[in-house]
Length: 356
Ligand code: NAI
Ligand code: MG
Image 1 (cartoon, helix red, strand yellow):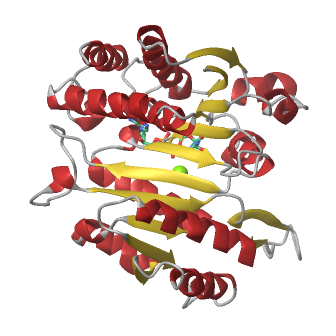
Image 2 (cartoon, rainbow, N blue to C red):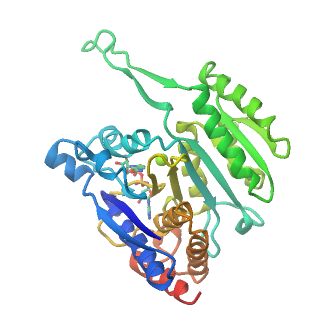
Image 3 (spheres, rainbow, N blue to C red):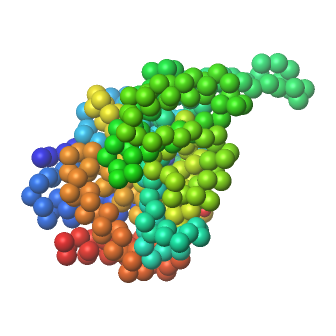
């Protein structure tokens, strides 16, 4: 198989970690005869914005829509407002390509300082399924409804929950649960306070769950779920939530597991009509950019999700095993308690791959 990957390194550490992930994929392509790939680079991001007044080329979606996958670093510069950089690129791609399922596994890696005090934490792992095209990030609203200038401005920010949008992502969560040892789906909303969209979500969840009698379910409010993440993470298997709520919970999950730097994610268009996009959960981390110390594990793990999506589950598994072997050896960056550089971590992952 031959794949064409659209690579968007973006800004800050995004550029540093994407190259590491590609080194890992190149190594696998060279050593296995199962696949080859070519990468097309797109220099979009905040520097592009400062030069051209937009985050991506005008016909950017056209340029990448026939690629087999998109491999994405991160965006964000201190000199460009965050809502411009996020909407101009990442959300433009997720919504433009109908990548409605954002899969974010939470993995506890061996040998690292995780923030969780739990007796058997190295066995813990769960998957967050984030609705990725609507909800709180539907972009509907506006400012200056009244009295701008005399400190009486009103801004409106609306959420959109469609029955179809809720149903497809909830169903996706059930399908993932069927593949796990413990079959369980937890739905998270704030439907006591958000009485329209999230009540619709709850109703759809109850309806869909009846089609999966073999799957255990529970439903939580997000504030209590934040506490549950810390207190009883062993109860979590597949957790499905709206765009904003799952965004917040996924940073909490990865911080519990050790660092934002280790969390991988896949933005899937499950119908395959458009390419899916693979990226770490973290942002461009301007505080450590350019120092060569960013943790590449989240982005390398995202490459594993990409290979799995492209029909190479064995290669994906090899990457994840090599990551675990590397953290077990203590070859880790500062955010998870080590002293190694970005490159050294990748080198170690590649050297474990060559032994497999
Ligand atoms: P961030 O994730 O960039 O950084 C948060 C903290 O985690 C920082 O202290 C950073 O050093 C650390 N960190 C993150 N990734 C790391 C890694 N791989 N290795 C070691 N340490 C790591 O989030 P922040 O600071 O809120 O946002 C920075 C910029 O990134 C903003 O412009 C924001 O809008 C953007 N952003 C972009 C995202 C994307 O492109 N998908 C997602 C989240 C934020
Ligand atoms: Mg986030």
